[in-house]
Length: 84
Picture: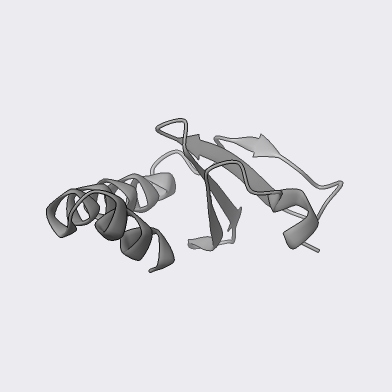
């Protein structure tokens, strides 16, 4: 995970691991209330966007029986241009 590597270099492996675990927990809970986030059909049909801890953007879609995480974007990246 690029985010882990970046945080590990900037802070420490322990800090990076803790962050990665929080991200994973957050993403797993998307299945509980999967219709959350902002629907962005204008970019891609079914695309939903939600923020995590004001530094990460989670792009996902809701399917019949699961939530699919499409991409994670860290720290102000132009995620809209990368989702086509």
